[in-house]
Length: 183
Image (cartoon, rainbow, N blue to C red; front, side, top):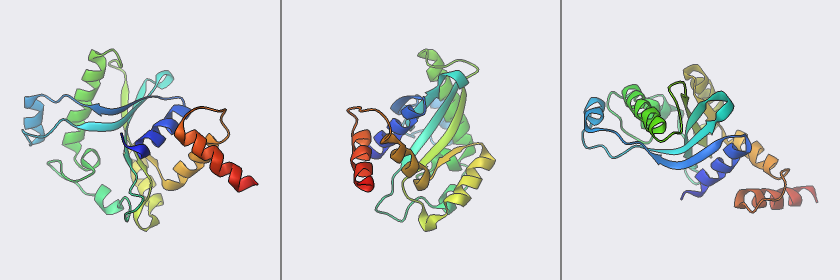
Protein backbone atom coordinates (compact mmCIF):
# COMPACT_ATOMS: atom_id res chain seq x y z
CA UNK A 1 0.00 0.00 0.00
CA UNK A 2 1.27 3.44 -0.90
CA UNK A 3 1.09 5.82 2.08
CA UNK A 4 0.55 8.91 -0.06
CA UNK A 5 -2.41 7.14 -1.68
CA UNK A 6 -3.67 6.34 1.80
CA UNK A 7 -3.54 10.02 2.80
CA UNK A 8 -5.41 11.03 -0.37
CA UNK A 9 -7.94 8.27 0.34
CA UNK A 10 -8.56 9.74 3.81
CA UNK A 11 -9.00 13.22 2.31
CA UNK A 12 -11.49 11.93 -0.28
CA UNK A 13 -13.45 10.10 2.41
CA UNK A 14 -13.53 13.35 4.38
CA UNK A 15 -15.26 14.94 1.38
CA UNK A 16 -17.99 12.29 1.34
CA UNK A 17 -16.55 9.79 -1.14
CA UNK A 18 -16.58 6.02 -0.77
CA UNK A 19 -13.08 4.97 -1.82
CA UNK A 20 -11.49 1.80 -3.22
CA UNK A 21 -7.73 1.65 -3.47
CA UNK A 22 -5.67 -0.04 -6.21
CA UNK A 23 -8.55 -1.05 -8.49
CA UNK A 24 -7.48 -3.26 -11.40
CA UNK A 25 -9.39 -2.95 -14.66
CA UNK A 26 -10.03 -6.26 -16.47
CA UNK A 27 -9.24 -5.49 -20.12
CA UNK A 28 -10.11 -8.15 -22.68
CA UNK A 29 -7.65 -9.32 -25.35
CA UNK A 30 -9.68 -7.42 -27.95
CA UNK A 31 -9.53 -4.21 -25.87
CA UNK A 32 -5.77 -4.62 -25.50
CA UNK A 33 -5.47 -4.94 -29.29
CA UNK A 34 -7.54 -1.76 -29.74
CA UNK A 35 -5.17 0.01 -27.35
CA UNK A 36 -2.24 -1.09 -29.49
CA UNK A 37 -0.52 -3.20 -26.83
CA UNK A 38 -1.78 -6.76 -26.79
CA UNK A 39 0.43 -7.70 -23.83
CA UNK A 40 -0.24 -4.66 -21.62
CA UNK A 41 -0.73 -5.51 -17.92
CA UNK A 42 -4.07 -4.82 -16.28
CA UNK A 43 -4.41 -1.07 -15.70
CA UNK A 44 -4.57 -0.15 -12.03
CA UNK A 45 -6.36 2.97 -10.84
CA UNK A 46 -4.80 4.27 -7.61
CA UNK A 47 -8.11 5.38 -6.09
CA UNK A 48 -11.72 5.07 -7.20
CA UNK A 49 -13.78 7.61 -5.28
CA UNK A 50 -17.58 7.38 -5.54
CA UNK A 51 -19.93 10.21 -4.62
CA UNK A 52 -23.39 8.59 -4.37
CA UNK A 53 -25.54 11.73 -4.66
CA UNK A 54 -23.69 12.68 -7.86
CA UNK A 55 -23.41 9.11 -9.22
CA UNK A 56 -19.85 10.14 -10.02
CA UNK A 57 -16.60 8.23 -9.73
CA UNK A 58 -13.23 9.95 -9.61
CA UNK A 59 -10.53 7.77 -11.13
CA UNK A 60 -7.79 9.37 -9.07
CA UNK A 61 -4.07 8.94 -9.60
CA UNK A 62 -1.86 9.86 -6.65
CA UNK A 63 1.72 10.97 -7.39
CA UNK A 64 3.68 12.04 -4.32
CA UNK A 65 7.06 12.81 -5.96
CA UNK A 66 8.04 14.44 -2.64
CA UNK A 67 11.79 13.90 -3.02
CA UNK A 68 11.91 14.34 -6.78
CA UNK A 69 11.43 17.31 -9.12
CA UNK A 70 7.65 16.68 -9.09
CA UNK A 71 4.82 16.26 -11.57
CA UNK A 72 5.78 17.94 -14.84
CA UNK A 73 3.28 19.93 -16.88
CA UNK A 74 5.17 18.99 -20.04
CA UNK A 75 4.59 15.28 -19.33
CA UNK A 76 0.86 15.83 -18.80
CA UNK A 77 0.67 17.79 -22.07
CA UNK A 78 2.12 14.93 -24.11
CA UNK A 79 -0.19 13.15 -26.54
CA UNK A 80 0.39 9.49 -27.36
CA UNK A 81 -1.46 7.21 -29.78
CA UNK A 82 -0.24 4.18 -27.79
CA UNK A 83 0.01 4.46 -23.99
CA UNK A 84 3.44 5.09 -22.53
CA UNK A 85 5.05 6.76 -19.55
CA UNK A 86 3.75 7.52 -16.06
CA UNK A 87 0.63 9.37 -17.16
CA UNK A 88 -0.98 6.94 -19.63
CA UNK A 89 -4.56 7.82 -18.66
CA UNK A 90 -3.82 11.53 -19.12
CA UNK A 91 -1.80 11.39 -22.33
CA UNK A 92 -3.48 8.69 -24.44
CA UNK A 93 -7.13 9.38 -25.25
CA UNK A 94 -7.74 5.99 -26.87
CA UNK A 95 -6.30 4.18 -23.83
CA UNK A 96 -8.33 6.31 -21.41
CA UNK A 97 -11.53 5.75 -23.38
CA UNK A 98 -11.13 1.97 -23.52
CA UNK A 99 -10.01 1.67 -19.89
CA UNK A 100 -12.92 3.83 -18.67
CA UNK A 101 -15.45 1.88 -20.77
CA UNK A 102 -14.17 -1.38 -19.27
CA UNK A 103 -13.96 0.17 -15.79
CA UNK A 104 -17.59 1.24 -16.02
CA UNK A 105 -18.65 -2.24 -17.15
CA UNK A 106 -16.59 -3.85 -14.35
CA UNK A 107 -18.29 -1.55 -11.82
CA UNK A 108 -21.74 -2.32 -13.22
CA UNK A 109 -20.97 -6.06 -13.15
CA UNK A 110 -20.03 -5.93 -9.46
CA UNK A 111 -22.96 -3.67 -8.49
CA UNK A 112 -20.86 -0.54 -7.89
CA UNK A 113 -22.18 1.57 -10.75
CA UNK A 114 -24.84 1.88 -13.44
CA UNK A 115 -25.17 3.15 -17.01
CA UNK A 116 -25.52 6.75 -15.78
CA UNK A 117 -22.40 6.63 -13.57
CA UNK A 118 -19.97 9.32 -14.68
CA UNK A 119 -16.22 8.65 -14.48
CA UNK A 120 -13.91 11.65 -14.11
CA UNK A 121 -10.13 11.52 -14.21
CA UNK A 122 -8.18 13.15 -11.38
CA UNK A 123 -4.66 13.64 -10.08
CA UNK A 124 -3.34 14.44 -6.61
CA UNK A 125 0.24 15.75 -6.76
CA UNK A 126 2.45 15.96 -3.68
CA UNK A 127 4.94 18.09 -5.59
CA UNK A 128 4.79 19.97 -8.89
CA UNK A 129 7.86 20.73 -10.98
CA UNK A 130 8.71 24.45 -11.06
CA UNK A 131 5.54 25.19 -9.05
CA UNK A 132 3.47 25.17 -12.26
CA UNK A 133 0.33 24.00 -10.44
CA UNK A 134 -1.82 26.87 -11.77
CA UNK A 135 -1.06 25.78 -15.34
CA UNK A 136 -1.84 22.15 -14.52
CA UNK A 137 -5.08 23.29 -12.86
CA UNK A 138 -6.01 25.19 -16.04
CA UNK A 139 -5.17 22.20 -18.28
CA UNK A 140 -7.27 19.87 -16.11
CA UNK A 141 -10.15 22.31 -15.96
CA UNK A 142 -10.19 22.54 -19.77
CA UNK A 143 -10.31 18.75 -20.01
CA UNK A 144 -12.96 18.29 -17.31
CA UNK A 145 -10.53 16.60 -14.93
CA UNK A 146 -9.85 17.15 -11.23
CA UNK A 147 -6.46 18.34 -9.92
CA UNK A 148 -5.33 18.56 -6.32
CA UNK A 149 -2.15 20.63 -6.05
CA UNK A 150 0.27 20.33 -3.13
CA UNK A 151 -1.36 23.45 -1.67
CA UNK A 152 -4.84 21.90 -1.99
CA UNK A 153 -3.61 18.75 -0.27
CA UNK A 154 -1.93 20.78 2.48
CA UNK A 155 -5.11 22.73 3.23
CA UNK A 156 -7.17 19.52 3.25
CA UNK A 157 -4.69 17.88 5.63
CA UNK A 158 -4.85 20.91 7.95
CA UNK A 159 -8.65 20.52 8.02
CA UNK A 160 -8.17 16.92 9.18
CA UNK A 161 -6.97 18.33 12.51
CA UNK A 162 -10.44 19.81 13.05
CA UNK A 163 -12.15 16.43 12.80
CA UNK A 164 -13.04 14.36 15.81
CA UNK A 165 -10.60 11.71 16.95
CA UNK A 166 -10.19 8.79 14.58
CA UNK A 167 -7.52 6.10 14.78
CA UNK A 168 -6.25 7.06 11.34
CA UNK A 169 -2.55 7.94 10.86
CA UNK A 170 -3.18 10.98 8.62
CA UNK A 171 -5.70 12.47 11.05
CA UNK A 172 -3.52 11.81 14.11
CA UNK A 173 -0.49 13.34 12.35
CA UNK A 174 -2.50 16.42 11.33
CA UNK A 175 -3.70 16.88 14.91
CA UNK A 176 -0.15 16.59 16.29
CA UNK A 177 1.29 19.04 13.74
CA UNK A 178 -1.51 21.57 14.10
CA UNK A 179 -1.33 21.43 17.89
CA UNK A 180 2.38 22.29 17.63
CA UNK A 181 1.62 25.16 15.28
CA UNK A 182 -0.87 26.78 17.69
CA UNK A 183 1.06 26.40 20.95
